[in-house]
Image (tube, rainbow, N blue to C red; front, side, top):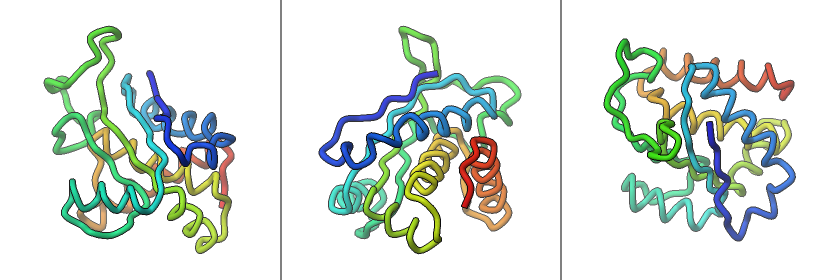
Length: 161
């Protein structure tokens, strides 16, 4: 398993949280038995808005974006036989993709929800990782399942509201 934190101008704002964020994203993968690699980029509102407009045709600021390397129509763990996935030629690990997290939006949400910025950043990293592994929240039931899974991962790490 490999989780890379991409260098960015805003990285210094979250540098003290990176080890815990990597642990949370790693636990999301381990919980589903996924041996994969992903990259997390911490960015500002302007950049996440640009990415959202370019890749999702949504011209607005959002908290997290996921860019899966593989087209999955359900969680990886639900595939009986592993689908044909992009893998890292050096390690053989599944290349899951990239996640972009808007630090400013995370700060706003942490204040709005009454919890720490660490908790919000970890939640967004786990949420993004779950998307890369094929989870989605298009329906109410899927949304609930995904939120419960993220909450359980954070709870097990001792990251509470």
